[in-house]
Length: 128
Image 1 (cartoon, one colour):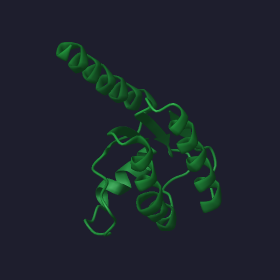
Image 2: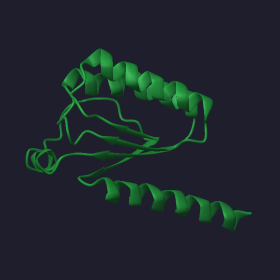
Image 3: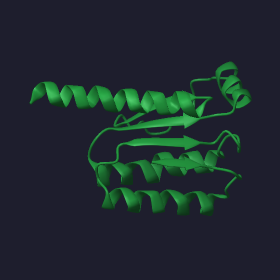
Image 4: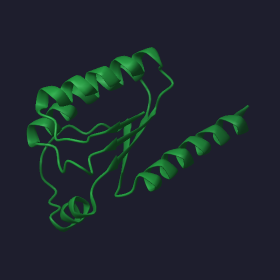
């Protein structure tokens, strides 16, 4: 599943899109590979990040009950700023069931998700 933000959402728009995505995932439970492209909008606000971490992600786990893989696509400048200004800090809950990876290119993000999927498929087939 891919969410590509073309314009900066306010918090209500963000919540609406993510709740719709979760409803879709509840219907099609085998979805465990996600891509969010925020390269056109820059960083989410602190309130939006907090909502995702404190409210949304726990609901995702409650619904899916398995690990998921999430590729997040940043603009090149946003990615460089994150690396340059990284400070271990904000105390937000950690969600070990979400395996994040960060990219500046959609093709790289897709390749990573496909690699993970193929690796899991091979492991399942080897165990059969």
